[in-house]
Image (cartoon, rainbow, N blue to C red; front, side, top):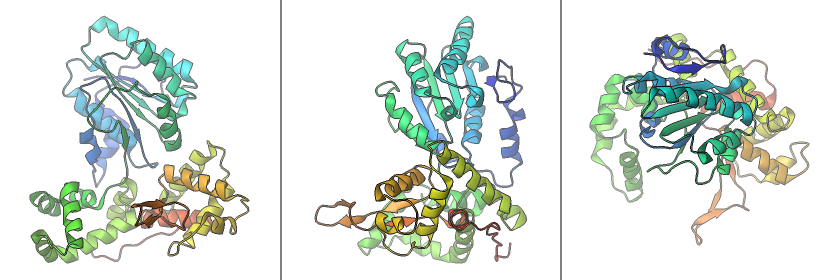
Length: 383
């Protein structure tokens, strides 16, 4: 079954062969560890909604889109209702409108009940939100579901704010963030036996695990914790693997196949981060200085002014902005002090920055300290 595809290699109309011939689907099916993100089940194409999908680089956003298309192809009556476009070669909102209008006009000849539009790397298009806004305002996206993805998470986050009231109304958030696997996702993906254990005890549900954790604060021990103690050694082994890989598909597969993570994989993430931030006129040297300062202070409370002293950036306001950009790029997180009396964050007090897992810690500290030879983890676990 075919779907309409505008690809990077061929930017104009092309009848694609079956989705199983798509490179991303082939790579997914050939992977040793095949991760189907849970967020896949949170996207519905039954209404006129405009979703955004953002997240860290190389986490699998395009693969997820292709998996969604694969599912749709088994459900829709006519594959011509599905339109996929990689936007790398589209320069601005005018060209974006022309490409989409071309498809929408072409599709009229087939009396399609509903259309499904996937725009990959939309953040490559200047002022893309203006093109989408015009299509919505002129009624051209009626009976159409849209999914926009982008690796420039900062762009997606800020640009989508310029489409108030034009994205439809869903039961959940329309802004989806694809993060690396949670530990429970990692366990159920790499270990089928543990997957059954999690499912039988509803531990694959966030609400259940949250209730168990909060119960511990009230000195209530859920019986399932006693059952899990039997699997302590196995869970410890899985947790070590999870920390090493960060739950990111490529490092996960490399670790399980080769018992190590290639230096080139770390380099891909460093180059991707630098490229994203350069788009926002943020100098590479500034980011390296900030990451070096933060990596040396991970166990202590810090102020933006303390980072200023470690860099040649003259303003704590600039530090705050750059740290925010790193947060938007999913490289680090900031934990603020809590004012107990007000039950809210105290933003003026010292805070802590954390890096999400050993994989991010490795490439961030390597980048910040200018280490040419990146860390290469070797698993000490017997397979």
